[in-house]
Length: 384
Picture 1 (cartoon, helix red, strand yellow):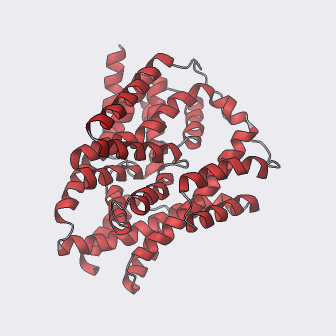
Picture 2 (picture 1 turned 90 degrees about the horizontal axis):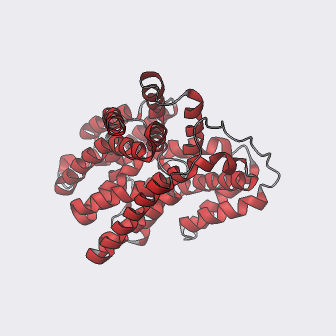
Picture 3 (picture 1 turned 60 degrees about the vertical axis):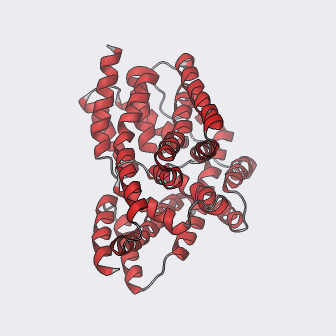
C-alpha cells in the first residue's frame, strides 16, 4: 500500500509540475490536488503547512509539495512528491542550458536575451516591492533593510548580513508584540528519526564522494547547500546569495550571464532556484547541473522534515519571531542590492526602459509571469 501511495504521489505531482508556473501561486493548485481531489490532508493541516514553509528557507511551493507528501505517507511520500514536482523544471532547464551554451552568441539569441535581461530586472524589482510592503511600515525593520543594503554595498558577505540581522533583531525588536502560534497540526508530532538519519547519511556520503572523486563538484555542492540554507523568504531569497557567490566571489560568470540564466528559469515550470541547474551546467556540464540542482534543494527539504514536529513551539518563541522579522527585513536590502547590480548591467535605451516598466506594471497587477516572459521573448526578437 505504501508503494502504491508513493507512486500516486509521484505521478500526481509530476503532472502538476509540468504546469508549475508562477512560484508561490502554485500553492492554490497544490491545495486543490491534495485536499479536494485526493483528501491527503485537511484544510487545517494544510494551513499549518503554509505557516511552516513560509518560515523556513527554500522555495515555498516546493516545500508545500514535500509537506503534503510527508503528511500523506511520511518521509518517503515527501521525497517522491518533491522529486516528481521538481523533475519537469530540471529537465527543461537542462535542455535550455545546453542550448544556451552552444548558441548564445548567435545574433538572434543575443537579441532574445537582451530583452529577457530587462524582464529579469522587472521580476527582481517586483520581488523587492512585494517583500518591502510590510517592512516600510515599521521603522526598525526598515532600518535593518537599509543597514543590510549598506553592508552589502561596503562588500560584506551576504551570509554574514543575514546572521547579523537575525541576531541584532532579537534585542532591537524586543517591543514587538509576539504573534500567536500557528494552527496546530492534527497529526502526530513524532520525529521520523530513522528515515531522516538515512537521508542525512546519504547526503554526507555523497558530499564525501565528491570530495574524493571531483573536488570542483564538491565545492559547487557546498556552495549550493549554503545558498539554500540561508534562502529565507522563498526562492527569491536565493538570488542575492547566488549573485554574490557565483559572480562576485568566484567569477564563474558575469552578472549578464546570470541574469540570462534567471530568465531561462522563468520559462520553465518550477521555482527560481532552478537557476542552479543553469549555473552548474555552464561550469561543469551535466554532472555540474545534477550536483547543483540536488544541492540547492537538500537543506530546505531536510529542514522541513526536522521542523514539522516542533514548529508550534518554535513559532511561539518571541526570540524566534524577532529573528525571522530581522531576516525578512535583511532580504529587502539584499534584493535591492541585486536589483541595482542587475540594472547597471543592462544597456538601457528608451525601448528597454519602456519594456521594463511595462513588465513591472504587469507583475504588480498580478499578470501571470509566464505570459510576461513569453511576450517579452517575442518582442525581444523584433525590438533588439
